[in-house]
Amino acid sequence: MKNLLPSDGELYLFKQFYPKIEANLIFNSLLNSLAWQQEQIFLYGRWVKVPRLMCWYGDENAQYQYSGVSHQPQPWTQELLTVKHKVEENLPCTFNSVMANLYRNGSDSMGCHADDEKELGDNPFIASLSFGEPRLLKFRHKKSKQVMDIVLGHGDLLLMAGEIQHYWKHELPKTKKIKNERINLTFRRIM
Image (cartoon, rainbow, N blue to C red):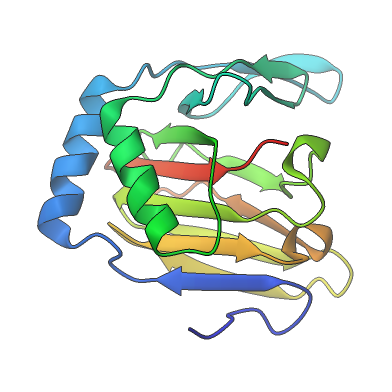
């Protein structure tokens, strides 16, 4: 598999890691079974609503903190464990947690950031699995300002590895074109 980044990290895309029919079943199940909530984060000196719904699942000790919010994981659901095991069978890493994000329409988004929290370790493997409406994921190099766009489709798996979090930021921008829901699962190993 070819590294999509020109330098400073590793990025791999597995198109249709889950084929459409299986991806449809997983999407519908996750949409109806996960404990979705809208959180608030501390940003620029004030509390603001996160522009998407989210939930955190994982091993009991996989607590995660960012933007002033501590996330104590809910216990794995059987379906999340099944998806996690399939991802792990195809990658050189294991995970102890997953952040699930539900983007209800194009107004929901994820701001520009790097997954560089100390709990993730120095060069974390992060597996990002998408279901539902395709969305644009933008990468920006922190120094050169080079931009790279990737459209993540229904059933696609993206792996971020190596030094990518040191040199690149990524975001899922708002768009007026998207009207349908998207679920993203980001599998991580909390140290």
